Amino acid sequence: MIVSGWDVLDASHAALRTAVGAVPAAGWHLPTPCESWSVAQVFQHAVGDQIGFAAALTGEAGPDFNPFDPSGEMEGVDPGAFLEDALARSAKAWAGVDRDAVEVPTPVPPHTMSPWSGSAACGLDAAVHAWDIALATGRQSPLTPELARPLLKVAREIVEPLRPYGAYAAALAPEQGDDDVALLLRYLGRDPRWSAS
Image (cartoon, rainbow, N blue to C red):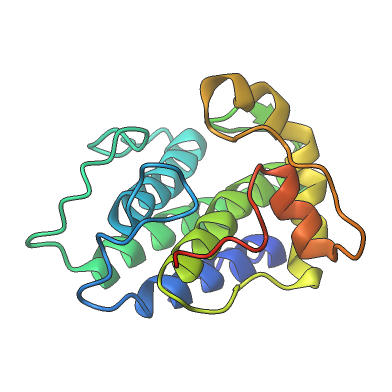
């Protein structure tokens, strides 16, 4: 298992790995908090985005499918191998980043970010989709307050320009008693109390 050395990204990759590893064989077609997307589609999107972040850094080829129009077809796919390939590419690319660089390329606006922000943005994508998959399959949230705090910081840097494209729903108003995880989820347009039932 390759790690990037960026704490937020590595924790987010671990969350996604855990969530995907717990999907039951019959769970790929379950609905998720991503409206009209199944677990399989969220999974494919998350994999494609990790490859996209890696490609932005290395200049290598991006995903060979459109992460924003995932098929949801899982026949013949080994989910663990498919995910590990993407996470390894992402972690290896981020491990090679100069921490003192002024900026690095990213696939999301503004397309260049500080190394920390870029790695955290890559982590945000993995972590939020780990939450989507975990909740859809009846598992507990993989997000912790310690992870949510830096993710919210980077979310406030990148999310607003992405909302018009449908990448994130409109933010939900915070509610009394929200912890760091709930604040992050509401900012991303997700209901912390979402349930498939």
